[in-house]
Length: 85
Image 1 (cartoon, rainbow, N blue to C red):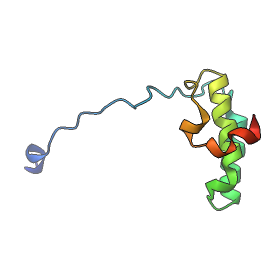
Image 2: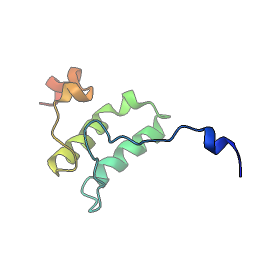
Image 3: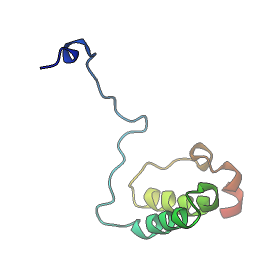
Image 4: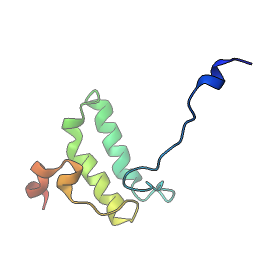
């Protein structure tokens, strides 16, 4: 047995700041997720070019109670808020 295990500090996990992030077991937002991931793959992981798809995905999650409703500017979409709404 290694003596390093006695010298390590214990790890105490903390919950996420905004609570749990439920999995989409029913696949309600799978279409939006796949569109976003495909876009990232095609654009060499340039998320700026796929921002509108990530917004659609988050909107789907909020609509299906898979995440808490949040203001778009708190999610980093303040400049696009007026374009979509």
